[in-house]
Length: 348
Figure 1 (cartoon, rainbow, N blue to C red):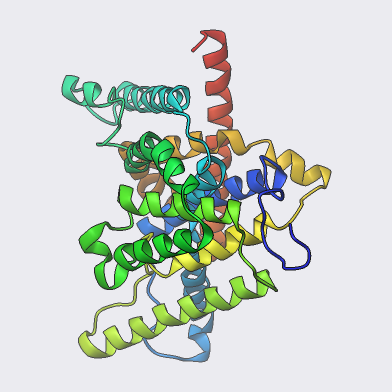
Figure 2: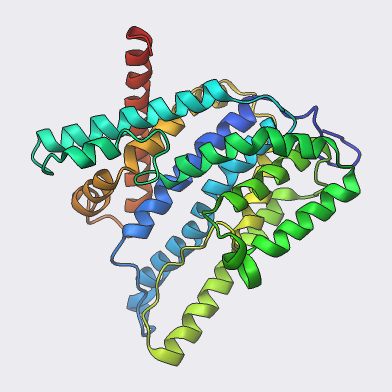
């Protein structure tokens, strides 16, 4: 890092503890966001009284937590762009590894659900689980594989741009792809176009950095501003139509993009050198397995709608959400560690 300007430079990164920790945090945020998305009881009290303060506090904490969880997907793609935006070689082996791992999870989870009578075996459904590009089960993996296919060409483009033209390209793409006013017309938060934009942003951070002082303070301020935006929108909607308050689910190309960018910068500029941090970072290679484990369609229903509400239901909802999310995350890490051992033994 350039200590005079506070910029992130290309010499301050690498596959080091800080970035591996960010992978862990990003996946934990994704898991938590998925549980929040499936929650049924997320409305605050409609009348204020001393007795309603705990319920109101709980709702506000969940709303603020949801703001952070909406950054997870963007963080993963930003990390990819940082590491690959200057590499023009095809990552064919990596793409094959991603596809095989995805098929393994899809097939094993499906067969287990059939075995325990949670679903009826269907040949057509089984074949769908063999898709090398899993368009029916894992949207993120499908778009990520598409990104890896075009990544070498994006890297070639980046190599031809100076700083001014690079900024201009990012500004144009942002104007076209951000949710308002044209984003849903030209792409959307789950589109390959948005992933390419994030990839290029990651590459820009690698090459030129981002001058930012008091970065954690900026994270807090931006998070509170997004929280306030959601709250005001909720209140206006309720006053206008009587519609209930809901936890906001921001598209990846919405305002939480700025928060994801700030969180990325904060982790990138710090060195987590303690033994504990290094040990936590060791689980980063298994985070992709956490996604595959908990996001399979049948598993989503089993985890979030059938199982999670039964575990310690009397806890305050905010604590309950955090606890269940961590438990699902840790289960996913253990399962993917076992999967890697299986792959080594076969070998795959």
